[in-house]
Image 1 (cartoon, helix red, strand yellow):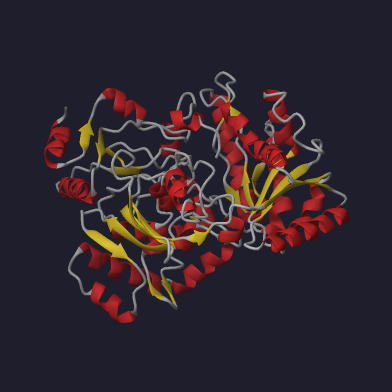
Image 2 (cartoon, one colour):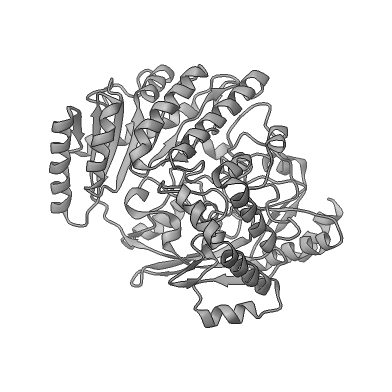
Length: 542
């Protein structure tokens, strides 16, 4: 072991390793990027996290920067779960439910617990945490908080930030703070501290006060429901008070390391009505979607014709008999989970009327077998990732954009044109109800020509999303992959503001170095020569 690994192992309760095998494993997440770390730390407690951060801070003060990357399940597609220094893997030990109150409907958890494990417990109490991602079987709560995750039910229930009561966070120098809304008196007390926490409160308050007009202007640029670009300076200072929580949510571990979270829960109704609406023409989506959203569905996902064709090509029998109208231009998967069964039936009747006026077709699940058919169709998107086509793979890039609902149809037309011009299959899926569009180009990233094509497509997709009033990052975060586009989102002054926020929290650049700050040349230098997913990514969607 290296001197650093030996020192950390002596002072930490969790395990430490710098074995080549472990370092190789943690050099990848689910993105197309790779960075080999120096040391892997499996923290056993918040104390281990604090000691590690303090050690790295002291090194940085002497001019030696050893970055820390907090990592959950490694399902990040933006390159935010890899790093050159210490990778801190939370799934081994810090994966517990610390408190659960079914009556008051809240839970306190450590970051390494997966959404799936937490939901299994919550369901037994008639509760759930709505913004679980499709990768809930292996995605961790810590990763979800770091990205401010959304999921299939976010069209009704919103993002994870809506459910966060408070956080425990280890700062870059090892200090531990608790975030929650502060009144003016509490804020003044915090700003009077001589610690890094005090510096942060003073710095963030001044940054917001001095740039109110700029922040208002930048916020107005993005009209889509979800935006993870940069740092959320917009919601720190509100009528409710001053709260650093929005800054940590979506920061991808680059401002602080979340070690504990208290989350508000929602009553879970296991009985829901499920249907598939198939539209013969994509153009019909413009009029149909707003009327569907008026019915308050709990799920409103989409899969287009090109995706269905691609799935059929890769797995000819998978969709056989699942759809009443497989040749439709686009399919919407819709769910209603109203607490009262009568409300669900009423919504279904209204949906049927919408379909009649549109000329589309509606398949309603009236039995367990029907539900299984629809859910199998929903999960079939995984075929695009699971199928082995040699070195040519569906890669998670030029994707995860969000646009306003009124711009969704136009954006999809532009995206199809961009992919077609690049001679790529324009397979589209995502959350139509939130304007979230996902497309994974099928490329061999080991070939120079395909890499160039990837960046051309990325440039065009992100430009189109921004022109539509949307965001380059709906839920997966900027990470390193989308960091070079940050200036296109907020402009030179706005993106400079984001970098200033980073410096306030992390003056030595210890925390997830390169995340949200990487340049295009830095990204190109760390692209893998071939793409493969972590072992857990070979599990299907939940």
